[in-house]
Amino acid sequence: MKQLQNYIDGRFVAGKREFPDINPADGTTIAQAGEADGELVDAAVEAARRALRGEWGRVGVLERAAALYRVAEGIEKRFEQFVAAEVCDTGKPAALAARLDVPRGAANFRVFADLIKTAGVEAFQTETADGREALNYAVRKPVGVVGIITPWNLPLLLLTWKTAPALACGNAVVVKPSEETPATATMLAEVIHEAGIPKGVFNLLHGFGPGSAGEFLTRHDGVNAITFTGESKTGAEIMKACAPAVRPVSFELGGKNAAIVFADCNFDETVNGLAEAVFMNTGQVCLCAERVYVERPMFERLVDALKRKAEGLKAGWPMETTTTLGPLISAQHREKVLSYYKVARDEGATVVTGGGVPVFGDARDHGFWVQPTIFTGLAEAARCVKEEIFGPVCHVRAFDTEEEAVAMANDTRYGLAASIWTTELNRAHRVARQMNAGITWVNCWFLRDLRTPFGGVGLSGIGREGGMHSLNFYSELNNVCIRT
Ligand code: NAD
Ligand code: 6OH
Image 1 (cartoon, protein in one colour):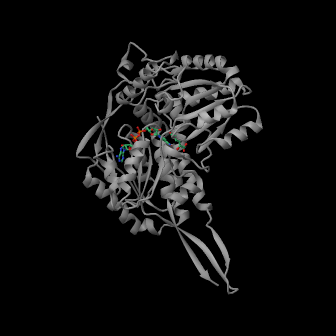
Image 2: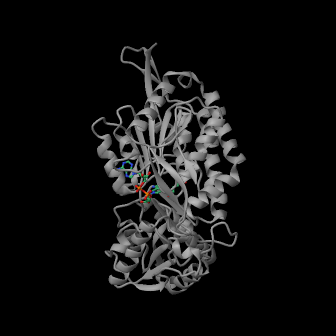
Image 3: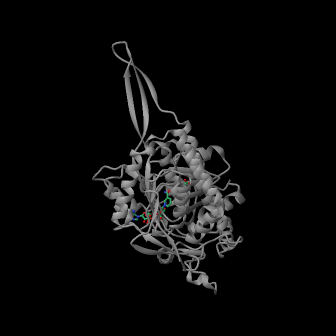
């Protein structure tokens, strides 16, 4: 059986205990990963600190950017292997991994290499009361050792989204991918090794959260900042762990995202876009729309079209090209999603389609599949309208006025991403500006320009990453003020 090891100080290191890496399509164990204990976490952080004091601490921006380019190329050289590993770990359709996860893994390195080369700093000429002047300019320095903790839904995409800018800014990193998806992180360590990045600059720890590598990393005195993507309640725990040392955090957390569909929308494009927004990656994207609000005259037609989309998804073996829907990540996550399917029925929902578990009559019956599901008829206060489910499911509700739609969309403790579907330009601008969210898409969803601010409000996170926002989190600015 394949062994997935930690990567510390330029060497692959086994863990003292192993845990299984399971393929969610059929429940089989595909590899064993070595869990990092406290000692290995110490070793990784110490290696990172040494790297900062050594060669990496003296490497200039151009050389760092060149190293990031080599990593991007290394990912592309092993493109098919990355796709296969991501597919085995997550069960997502290979077509999706090949279109989204793996290309973004490479793009993240290129974008931040380009950005760090072109990023300027602030400068101000200051007039002083005595008629003289001062010149202020900011110097960008690495934060130090950055701890990076990521989830299982877009494993390579999210790990590289944080690793690339952290390295671009000259930091050393200790990364802890999700215990559900250790494979592509291990391959990334191999690519980074081959790219000739000095030892200790990138360290990889496998393991869990509480009482394991994740928690140890967040509590470690040698770590200068933590960047985390995952559940809001995990974010709260990490904040507590970081509080005593006032370690800065950047959080991209959960969502309960709304889509607002106006009757003047381009119907076909909207239905296609919504089908992606609700069902992509089996609904396991933090940006997925779990609440769809439709202007009343279009309600029946849209529910019917979305139902046909859901029923047209092909839950197949992930490597088959015709497959468009994968399983959920784990048995435990399926239990959670199915418990919400039950709660919705108990709360009085109408089940438009789905609501259960598909039966295949083959090994997929040992995997963690659920049917794509659409509910209507729930009150806005219902748990399934308020809580993040993170599955292929949405609730659709009719609205009568723009004000009502905006109020319902904003009535959430989360605030990550909204989407608005309309052909009326003024309305698009007016409604977009009112969204209480970090990201608002109009007539599209998950259309990404990596230079834009990315993050959420409320329970959806703290801070923004993307473009200069990432560079600012992963660096410290030292303002130099010179009397002239
Ligand atoms: P999770 O919070 O359970 O786990 C994420 C990571 O944190 C894993 O690596 C886990 O081992 C680690 N972890 C767990 N407890 C920890 C602790 N106490 N200390 C340190 N590390 C700990 O999240 P998940 O189930 O892997 O991912 C799904 C969630 O992530 C959803 O809520 C989803 O909305 C969110 N998400 C958000 C974004 C975003 O950009 N906003 C992106 C992807 C996923
Ligand atoms: C969450 O599941 C998706 C996050 C996406 C990004 O962080 C990104 O940069 O596109």
